[in-house]
Amino acid sequence: GGGAADAREPASRAAARAVVRACEALGRVEVEPVDCAFERAVEGVPELHEFSLAPSARAPRCSTGNMAFDPRDGTPAWHTDQSFRSDAPALSALYCVLAPTVGGETLFAGTAEALAALPAERRRGLAATHVTHSLEPLARQLRQWGGDVAQGRQHERAPAPRRL
Image 1 (tube, rainbow, N blue to C red):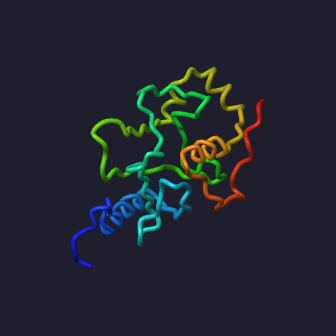
Image 2: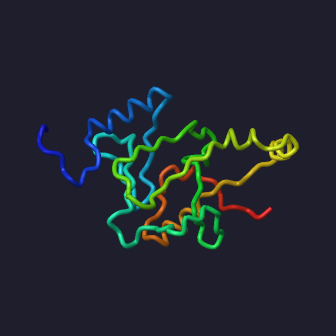
Image 3: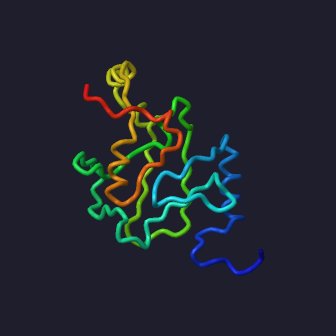
């Protein structure tokens, strides 16, 4: 230890641990399985995962700037991490080490605020609905890019979506 940091390592282990400590102030931090080819657990800090799409010719691209969902290719992929679980986490945290000068946006939506902003009649209608949650659309997209969804915690994964 104490030597120069590896230029390929985007964050030192100490910085990674600091991120985890900050998140622990908000609640329990879980260790989750690595789910795709673009992800790895930070060495020595398994609670923190690094996602990197560079430098990879197979990396997904969304260069149009259009954030409207396209069901043909599943982009952009809005999701809530681990929301398929019955004990879904209260929050997700994102820590960016190196951002591109153009693109690379990650948008967060305040779903509680969005729900509160809906008319009361619409909220009542939504309160009576149930959804089937599946990772299959994400798995298809990751396979297209050369990755895959991990098989860990398979018992908690929801079945493929049903058409209602």
